[in-house]
Image (cartoon, rainbow, N blue to C red; front, side, top):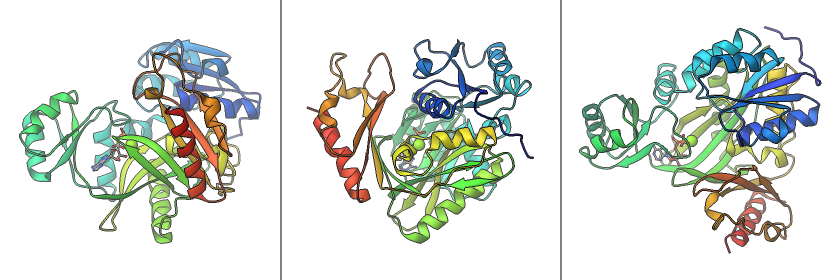
Length: 379
Ligand SMILES: Nc1ncnc2c1ncn2[C@@H]1O[C@H](COP(=O)(O)OP(=O)(O)O)[C@@H](O)[C@H]1O
Ligand SMILES: [Mg+2]
């Protein structure tokens, strides 16, 4: 399907105005688009960038329709939006990605079952809907992670278990209902691949990012990832196949694990900008945010080459003490470092408040720079 390009000057709607929406909206603004946002939070991060914010719950189909009526295209920065709202939007204006792929991706169990049915490589897992099924799953899989099927992110809604009897508490602990029990994997390296796809089928794949998580939350990411070249080729091919099989228009980030035994497995999918590609604003010829705008507007996709090594380090609310922000001037003493803040009004431990980015002559140098700058903020 070819799409007449939606040219700068038009209005783009965003479902979700968190930090991903904010950064994508800034890229769209740079290109000359107008932005409107729907988000339940009156002080959402994208508010200062949008010419209009609709404050409404995700399930408010009338609010979705109201956004759609004023926009040439609607995209999103969060996938957990009820299908009724997605359909209300899509009945009025193009929605990218569409509700078909979003329905599959937005629920962890459905996403994993779909990946398995399509033959993509995954770790052992079982979908469970009762405490007893959870206990049985842990007995079969051994040490596991129980993950809620709905709404978990940044390691939230997850519980690690080693013995099967712990499965009952873990199931209720993550909220009951439906959960995925995953065998605990012996991970050697974590990587992600970002893919952009347009309605006419054009695709652009980014080289893999190397990612480091602490207690389930991304700490830093760096590119080039420095993986074995066959790992990179395999990871990029996998991500592209998944994107095409899902029929994504927009972005798809594919998180992967390289195990110590050499297996490359898919962890999870995100049909939107992703924390592990924030360095694309510095390192790549086209940032993930601009790429998303190009893809959903039917513009030619931008080059994904790495122009210079780049890294990011997340800034969590833990760095704020009694509401007082760390001394960002300190971070800026390190060459190549930039500070990115999301304008969130209050800091809480674990809350993503911003990130540091840096470029360097090598990926090691770019990473060392954000780490050094981060250490200065911890004082
Ligand atoms: N099956 C697993 N075995 C070992 N570590 C895991 C497993 N699943 C997740 N993790 C670790 O936890 C992190 C967050 O898990 P993930 O499923 O990606 O949840 P989220 O949706 O919160 O990002 C991963 O990036 C990885 O570091
Ligand atoms: Mg993840």
